[in-house]
Amino acid sequence: MAERAARRCCLGWDFSTQQVKVVAVDAELSVFYEDSVQFDRDLVEFGTQGGVHVHKDGLTVTSPVLMWVQALDIILEKMKASGFDFSQVLALSGAGQQHGSVYWKTGASQVLTSLSPDLPLREQLQACFSISNCPVWMDSSTAAQCRQLEAAVGGAQALSRLTGSRAYERFTGNQIAKIYQQNPEAYSHTERISLVSSFAASLFLGSYSPVDYSDGSGMNLLQIQDKVWSQACLGACAPRLEEKLGRPVPSCSVVGPISSYFVQRYGFPPGCKVVAFTGDNPASLAGMRLEEGDIAVSLGTSDTLFLWLQEPTPALEGHIFCNPVDPQHYMALLCFKNGSLMREKIRDESASGSWSEFSKALQSTEMGNGGNLGFYFDVMEITPEIIGRHRFSAENREVSAFPREVEIRALIEGQFMAKKIHAEALGYRVMPKTKILATGGASHNRDILQRWGAVSSFSPRKPALYSSHGEQVQSYTQ
Ligand SMILES: O=C(CO)[C@@H](O)[C@H](O)CF
Image 1 (cartoon, rainbow, N blue to C red):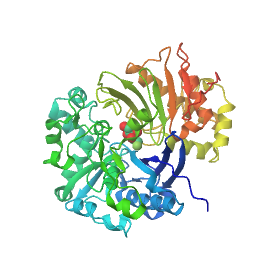
Image 2 (image 1 turned 90 degrees about the horizontal axis):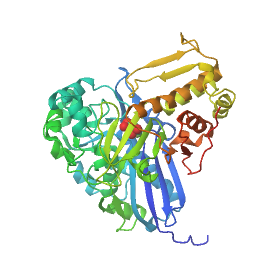
Image 3 (image 1 turned 135 degrees about the horizontal axis):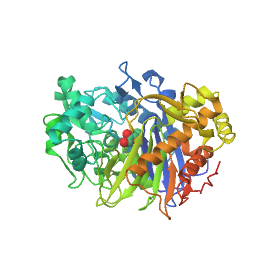
Image 4 (image 1 turned 30 degrees about the horizontal axis):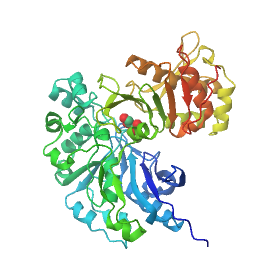
């Protein structure tokens, strides 16, 4: 076989809710390799749905940490089997679903630093976690811990000024507090707590990687102005927490060279740099090269709307994170939990599980949906905190059902109107030069995007709308 031309590159990793994905990017920023492991499809023994387990209480949501570890084993073996030349990898970094937390058992660091290159990660890390099922961002079971934290620091607004957000159930500090309160023995046997992003970086580093400022802003623990842990918040959540978290670092930090495990097992060069991983949304802001005044919409498992800010403007709704690109700046974010999983449910119910049927329904109905409005929250929504499906006819009467085409348009228009209304309530404004950039799985569906463009073009300043490929999407007026 002809020798493959050497192609120096960097690897980008995404440890998201539903999959682990890798892309290889060369010096011309061309993606020449990508692969993914879908948890539900490729790791069926873990029995997840959408990559998670929703517990019987309907509020607790977790994912098995060993599923994430094994997914990495699988994807690296697939790369190796495909003949991927790891020796050309100069550096790697990545993203993780925000707010999720991983609990390393006392003694795990010794295992992590002395991995045998003859064995997969899962086999060696099997006994390294004090909590097997990690709380993830879809969890909403920590309302009590949220109230305790807000009370400890002087209320919701005070907490928002300090950490960029009032207390949110999915935020890591409240999740740690719940584990300390309900499973004190596991907490006492935990020597390190990582976010999903820093957990992934730790696997490549062969030691504990620090939390970065940007993803650390999603914990209700980091003072976003000073970039240090808030002693008041740490103390309100759990004892001796700071020693389990380590010191946070700027999101663009090189945290060290790749572990010898990957050099010997896969052929990475010993000098391959590991750059701090960060949260999926901060990574999207960085990857999309968002500029001041632009707005990004990420249509993923969750839908998020975010933008670059020079100054923090903490409020009681939405979040302010440290900026992943410029540590002196910030980013604002609104999160909508009923994102792609909600769209997939309506697709299955009203379009026979087919995206092309879904698109046809959007094409066959008018903008404004004849005055019919719908809001669909099958799981407890974050923005705002509400659950259930709520449909209203043109006569403003609540109805129990819509015809299937009307239902599909009501879902999409309702999701985008909610984003616009909540964003404007926080002061986000479409400016003359505003670009709206779309990313995430659903952004590949032009029919969905064009409805977002139509909704956002309600404003007099008709912003330019771009897909995840960077192409401008002409938003129909229908
Ligand atoms: O909770 C969120 C952001 O605050 C979600 O967008 C998660 O990051 C999705 F993984």
